[in-house]
Length: 150
Image 1: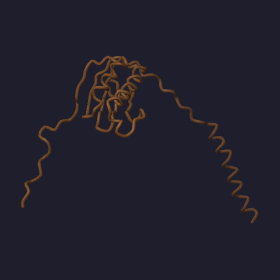
Image 2 (image 1 turned 60 degrees about the horizontal axis):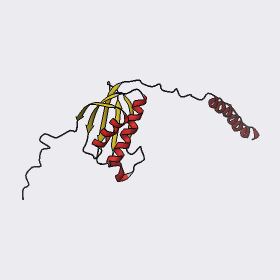
Image 3 (image 1 turned 180 degrees about the horizontal axis):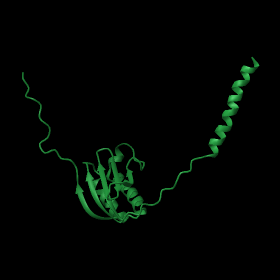
Image 4 (image 1 turned 30 degrees about the vertical axis):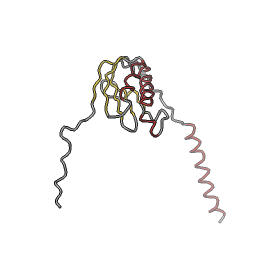
């Protein structure tokens, strides 16, 4: 019986050095270098609940992004123009650190933060060369329901 009790102890002892060796071989995170992109696109998605600002290079690879929710706004304060301004400033600052100077802006959605996000991008120092509203608009809408029979 004493042998059965010892065998689990031996297994635990074997596992301890393996865990210690794993702790020594810690995976080091490689610091990402700056992208150094001079021109790019800014996509502002402004909904009734939030504002999302994404800054990409010309190929569409994201360089920086920010949202009103990520900047600490909660609930109904997320859809305010001020929240959109703060989110756009944050994303613009991150992009400027990566060397971005001029941007094309694509605005999407019916929210309150559309214009204030644009002004914030300009205030950060990004040169806005082009603005387009890409909000999808239904041309003829959905097919109406069939006529009611009584």
